[in-house]
Amino acid sequence: MLVVCKFGGSSVSSPERFHQVKSIVESDDNRRVIVSSAIGKTTKDDNKITDLLYLLSAHVKYNINFDSILNKVKYRFNKIKEKLDLKIDLDKEFDEIVKHVDSEDYLVSRGEYLTSLMLSEYLGFRFIDAKDIIKFNYDGKINLEETYKLINEAYNSKDYIVDPGFYGSYPNGDIKLLSRGGSDITGAILARAINAERYENFTDVDGFYVASPKIVDSPKMIKEITYDELRELSYMGASVIHEETIFPIQDVNIPLYIKNTFNPDAKGTIINSSSADKSDIITGIAGKKDFISINVTKNKFSSKLEIIDYCLNVLKKYKVPVESIPTSIDSFSVVVEEKLAKNYIYDILSDLKKNEDIIDVKMDNNLALIAIVGRNMVYKPGISAKIFSILGKNNINIKLISQNTREISIIIGVQNEDFENAINKVYDGLIR
Ligand code: ASP
Image (cartoon, rainbow, N blue to C red; front, side):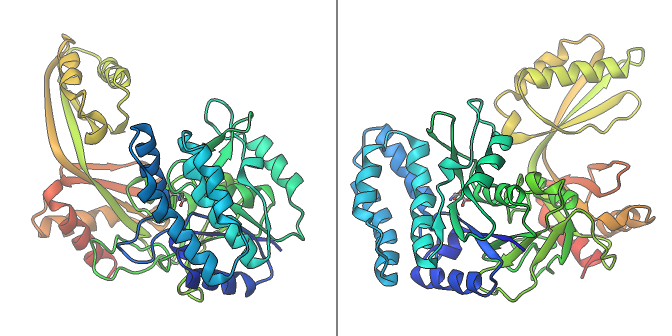
C-alpha cells in the first residue's frame, strides 16, 4: 500500500516542525512519497518563503538591491539546517540561485526545492526534482501523460522519496510554476501516477469546516465530503486546498484526506467520489462578496434566446465569466464577479444598450453569493423553504435564488452587508 503525503508550508516552517513531520511519516511505513511546500509561517508575523522570493524577484525586475530579502530567506533555511545538523551546502545552493535570479519561476521554485532537499536529508529519503517529473507543454498546461510516465520511471513502489511541490519544467528544462498553493496539485498528480491508496494533505487545521471560522463561531468539521461538493465549496471561496487538487484523483477515486500536522490523530476530512454518510443534510456553506447583477429587460416581441446570446457575447468580448443567469419572461439578470468586470462595466452596459430590442439595462452591485452545499439535499423537500424562512425571519432580503436540478447546492444572493449575518443565521438554523 502506498500513501502520498503533502506537507504545507506551515508544517515545515521550523526545525521543530520538521521533527513533527518526521514522526508523522515514520508512524506509517506506507507514507513513502512526500511532497513539500516551501517553508511557511510559524507565527502570524513570519513571512512565507514563497512571498519573499516573489518580492525578491520584483526587486530584481526594478533593479533594486535585494540583499536584505535574500538574507531573510537564507536565515530561515540556515536555522533549520543548523538545528537539525544537516549537511546540505546552503552557501553553494544560494550562490547558484543568485546566478539565475532573472527568471522569476526559477527563483520562486527554489523555496520548495531547498525545503524538500533538506526534508529528504532529514528523513533519509531520496530526493526527486520536480523539474524531472512534472512536465509542462509550451502552452502552460501540464502534459499529464508524459508526467505520469516520468514519475513511474523515476519511482518504484519500494522507494522512499521527497519531491518538491509547486513547479515542473517545460520540454526544454526551464522551470515553470503552478499557480499559488499548487503543491496540493503536485501531490495529487503523484498519487494518481503511482496509484496510491490515499493522498494525505497535511496542513494546519483539523480538516474542512462546515463554514468559515472567520465568519461562524466554532463551526463543526466536515467528516466526509464528495469531490463534487468540495468543488462547489472551493469555488465559492472555501479555501483549505487548491481548487484543482481533485482533478487528477477524482476519476480513479483516490481518497484525499485533509489532516492536521499539529494534531495528526484527528480524523480530518475525507474527500472521495461518494459518501455513505447520510447524517448531515448540509455538508457546507461558503460564499463570496462583491458580485454585480446586470439586469436586462427586453421588448416583448423579441426572442429571449437571441437577447441572452447577444448579452453573453458582449461579456465574452470583455472576457468576463458569468456566475448565474436567473430569468423571467421579459427580463433576466447576468451575475458577474465585480473584480473581473469592473474595468469594463460601463463598456459592457453601453454595448448592451446598443441592441434595439433591449429596452432597459440596470446594474445592481454589492451583491454577495452564498452556496449551501449538500449531497443529501437531493430529493429532500423543504430545504430551500427552511433557508428562506430563516432569512425572512431575520429580515434578510434575498436578491437572487439559483439551484440546478442536480440539487447539490442552493445559491442565494444577498446584499454584501447581510453576508456574514446570513451565513450565521443559516448555520444556526440548519446545523447548530
Ligand atoms: N509555496 C507555494 C505558495 O505559497 C506553493 C504551495 O505552498 O503550494 O503558494
